[in-house]
Each structure stands twice: as structure tokens, then as C-alpha cells.
Image (cartoon, rainbow, N blue to C red):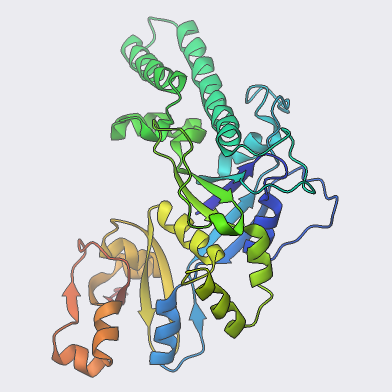
Length: 360
């Protein structure tokens, strides 16, 4: 899963990327291409199980963050692939799986704002428009090509594709992201290769003042029911410099149970419809990433393809059940361990022992 970080200049994108990945750039650095960093997904279950099994080897799930060049209103695209205004950021965005739109709420006379002042609704709307315009440009281009095709060549298929494009165009013109349009599996398959930007999950990161961390911001976008998460990048940078005791005391004063940075990583992971199942024992405790709704045999395949091919069954116990009873022996005594077949839908926090056999 790759999360593309986009936004206007001076919104805090580079600072956020540096906090997430540890990849810092010198002052005055001009970004011209995508920057990528891989981040561990914090998981207290892994930490607990490592102590439970007395092992130091811990492997967390991963998520990628991609820092895209800033969007500048009126910027010119590098080629004909997107309309003027989208610029380098959206040319680099085709490989990301979702977008984190960073908008700046904090006011600071020492930090330049490209539009003259703070307005999170306006700034979000600019990014929204650029994403929609890019998709609209692609749809209109596709319709033009369809109309130029011979009506005698698979006319029914051509008309079907045109009808779908017209449907997408009508929604985009209303400001509706394509991920909010009711599309059948066949329609989704039809447009998969077109890499529409608004077909991907989109959420907002509000770079806010310290006293606004618990505020619910409204982006005046009812069509898309936009979700958001708040983080004070300045404060988060200071928190990272504290020792664990001081950090815990600070979080308590802010009525937070964990850092905003950890919440953002988890939010991104969950927003991408991802869950984690676990494998655990004295040698290693490990988290594995799967799509929500995946069955046991698919989960086995994330560990090794042989496990998927030779899957027999999986012995499962939920993390919460194991933690509640405090020992494997007690969990077995109380029948918390379950044998599940191929079609079992794996749940977040399941601890799995996959049984498989590859015939020679």
C-alpha cells in the first residue's frame, strides 16, 4: 500500500514525510520527483506477543508513503497526460494507492502561504479540483476516441464503453469522486487500466495548531464524505525528541493515548481497507498485511506461495482471547483455538498457525 502525500506549498508535506520516514531534505531543497519511504505500522499486539514469547525478533506490517511534488494553482503539466493546473504532482501520482491531502490550518507569520492566508476549505477545494480535472480530462479524451472509432467495429461494446464514460463524466462534473460512484465489478474492471485518481481512497491531513488537535474540521464536501485526521507537525517533531517518560507525560496533558504520528500511520493503513493477522512463537512475532475480507488460503499465500498451494487448514486464536487468558495452555483448555478451512474470513488480530502439505 502506497499513500501519496499531496498538497499546496508550505502545507507541511515535507515535514510530515520526514517525521514518518526519517528522510530529511536540506533547507531550500526543490523537489522535482516522487520521494518514497517505507514505514512500520505501530502495533501494540506485536510488542505484547514479543514479551509473551520472550523473543526480540519483531516484524511489523509496512506501509509506503510517497511525497509528491507540490501542487501549484495554474502550474503547467509536463506532457499531455493531464490538464494544465495539475502539474508534476499528478504526473507522479499514478502509482499510489490512496491520497493524503495535507492542508494547513496553523497560522504563522514566519511561514509563507502561497495564497496569502490560511483557509483549509479553499486549499482542500483546490486539490480536489485538480484531482477531478485530471480524471475529467481523461474521460473526455476517452469519449473523443470512442466517437472516432468505426461504428461497424464491435458497435455494442463501443456504445457500452461510451455510456460508462458519460456516467463518469456526469459525476465528475458534479464534484463527485469516482470512488463514490456506484460501479459494478464489470465496470471497475473496464476502467482499471485508466488509472483514475479519484477512484482511490482520499483523506485529509490537517496540519493544525496544538490546541486544535481534537477539533472536527468541515471541508464543505458532502458529496464525498471526506474523512480527516489532525496532526501538529511542529509539535510532533518536538515530541519525537523526548524520552519515553517525558513523551508519556506530554501525551497525557494532551488527552492522547499515542502520538498523532502513530495515529496517522494506523489511520492510513485502515483507510486502505487493510488488516493484519499475526504469526507468533519463540523465534519471531510477525504481522502480515491482507485486504479486509480475505480468506484463510489467501492469507496463507502472503506468508509463502507453498502454503497457499498446499493449504490444509489453519489453527486460529484471536489476540484478545490469548491476552485475556494469559497462556497457550489455558487458551487450549478453554477451547479458544479453532481449526478453520480455506474459506474462513480472517479477522484483524487473528494469530495463525498454517498447516499445509506440498506433495513431492
